[in-house]
Every structure is written in structure tokens, then in C-alpha cells.
Length: 344
Image (tube, rainbow, N blue to C red; front, side, top):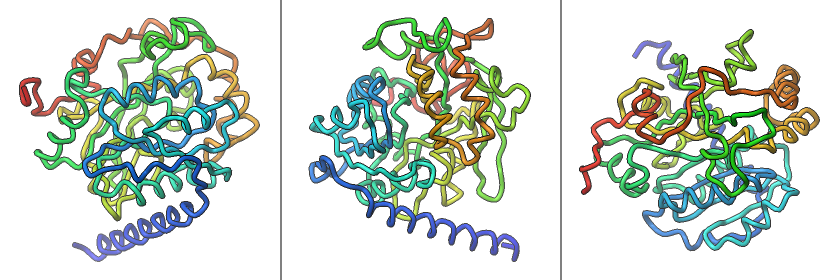
């Protein structure tokens, strides 16, 4: 190791410790609403979610992850006014905390999520996702998460990378193709199969994937400002791990190399992103006032105004969702050496 490499490794270790202490401090501000975490048992698969006003997503979110085999949900509510907190507090497999602080000042909820991962996640496989993200992976319809994580442990892979895939309606934003209560992929059945571009960034070795529908419609003139679409949502959680930027990247840096983005044949998943359900128009108008979702909110005010105008995002390049096999065929996720007969 060169002196420059040693210095960089030292800086990253200190940054990791700093972020760990941020989560410790943030945990002191979490107020329990319904703490059922004593029910968590060894081997349970956990979901960690930070949310505000996600009542449109929560029923489908809870149903999806329960069917996949999640045992317990650890949730932080950041001041919901739409009944989200009340719904979660009534669920027997959900532990809920309230925090009224600034979402942006908490690293967009990462400090709060980190506190729960540190308290309850160590030794567990943990899914850290947003309330509008539904994980799918090869064979997810026949092989639940316990099968998936058992395979990941057998091959020594500490987590699962995933592409965040924006789902959109046939018509303008503010509409959906099916009524509330329908499956997300019936309500928002379209997505962009590409192009996606990926590159590595030093010194953290983190992946940076951009492209897709938001890049095409909202950031064609400024592609470097388009949303980051790679995530590391499912990890075997160990002390010393921290998320850096949403779940896009982590420390230690080696964890960022478990997936190379679309086209990587290794086992990976896709997060079906339900951001563009009909409530997105009102949420975008609200965000113009709240300014909580970007480090430099003024730079993205044009984006929120464009979303609030209700454009049609589907065009001739859009593809109708058919299932996980389609995503594998398109190169958006890989199966690795995992085959349907492995555990049959």
C-alpha cells in the first residue's frame, strides 16, 4: 500500500466512525410509538424504512414484504399527517418511532435508519428501502427471502445490489392505469429499459448509475444531475457498516463492489419505484415549499415544477412490465449461479 493509499484508508475509517456516531446521536431523538422489537428473533429478516405521508404506498408495501418473508418492519415516521403513523402503529409486526426533526439534516433519514440498524439489525439480513420501493429478484415469486439470503451466504456475497426502476402510468402524472389497491405494476405498468450508464467513483469505489425515464424527461440538458439509480438495499448487517448516500453506497468501500450495475451477470435485484403514483403531483408542490429532499433544493426546483405540471412520461421507448424474467432478459438484473432447481 502506498502512503497515499494508507492516508485515504485512514480518512475513510474516520468518516465511517463519524457517521456511526451521528446515528448514535440520532437514535436519542427517536420517540417510540409502538416498539415491538423484543419480538425479533435470530434469523429474522428485517425491513428498515423512514417515511412521511406514504399512506398510498403502505398497504402494498407491507403486503409485498410480508409475502417475501420479512418478519419485522422497523419504521421511523417523520411527522406524517395522512394516517401513515396510525396504520403502522396498528400492525403487529411493525415497530414504529417518531422523529420530528429535519429530514435533510438527518442525511435524508440515514441517521435515523442507521440508529435502528445499529440497535436491532446487527447479525440480521436487513432491507433498507423507501416506502415506494418494492424489491424483486430472480425467482422471487417461488423462492422467498430466506432462500435468497441462504444462497448469498453460501456464495459469500454480503448483500444484493439493485437498480431502482421508475414505473410510470400510460397517461399524465396524477393518473394511474388501475384503481387504488391494485398491484403497483398494474397502476404504473411502464418503465424505460435503457439506456443506463454506470461508472465507479474513487476513493469509495461506489457505483454511479444514471439513466431511465427521469433522465430522459427531466434532465436531458443536465444528465449529471439526474437521479442515482443504483442501490444496496439488502445487506447482512454488521457493526461498522454505514450507508453514505441513501442506500446508493456504503463503507467499508469493499461493500460497494458487490454489483456493477445493469449488465452485471451476478445475482442482483430491481427496486420497482412507485414514486409516480397519483399523489406525486401534490407531493411535488409540497416539496417546493419544504425543500427537504436535495442537498441543494434550489437546483431542483425546476424538476419539481415540471413534475407538478403532470407531464406524460411514457413514450415509444417505454416497455410494459411483464415480470422478473423480463428484467433478466433486458440485463437489468442478473441470476448469477442461482438456478430455480437449486433448492427444489
